[in-house]
Length: 339
Image (cartoon, rainbow, N blue to C red; front, side):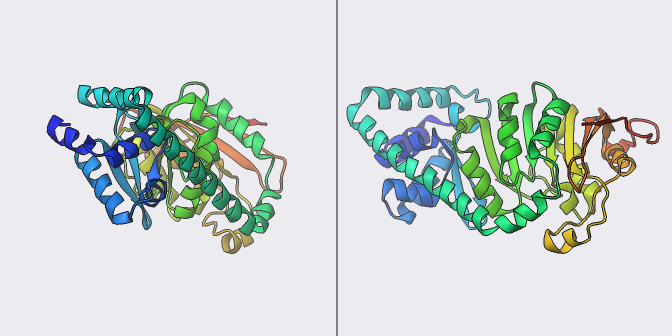
């Protein structure tokens, strides 16, 4: 971050307003347009200037472009740059001590509340439109609270940097957010990310990041996460071993993985009605896939109570790379706990 472009970027009232909005939450360019009541080209230009100065960053999600702050309180990452820290403090002080600027920020936040309500309404409409499908599948499963309790028990306390792969509605990211330093919620579907964004929008912006991406090619650096979760996701994968290999790549040595998914079953209709690629996983199969990926399998949990049995498998990332071969001898049966 350099002082001259930083000061130039801040030398505009609209860009100051945008930075204060981004301190509250990540926003789409179109949502900023609504709040500022300016044209999209003008807002896009403001966003570009802020990004070029290192104050914000953009990422594309389908046809939408989302913007988040790169200042310490809004970025979700450690920021050693003293200019960034000073800028954050300056903007907060300006809102506190400049009555005109404070009034404008208050108006913007009132409009931001409308954006939050609109996100929640879209999520409700989506669930209403798909209620029959959701209800049909839910009737086959045990109480979701059992699965959530099993996940919490399996993962324990501090989760560090958490990646929730296939976050869907964001429920697991929300559930685990209080135990994680930072949550990254990834999904390939723009519609699902919209649901997750509505659910997670009240969390501090520095604690959560939503990313559109494919679970077979995770858009993250090697060793980026302490904990990885896949909740009812792996049965959608044509090549689940590739998904687990990618999870191992982005897990730190000693990092943990928790997979909640279906035990083997014979309900072929789930392939056509719900696009399931796999009809569940056996313990031996999951054990081998974890070993091949570079995880050391741990205790599994078995949850009955519905037509379909749910399993929670856990593992720890071996210090050896997946290409170096299994970190343990050939697989043995995983100890199982029935809940």
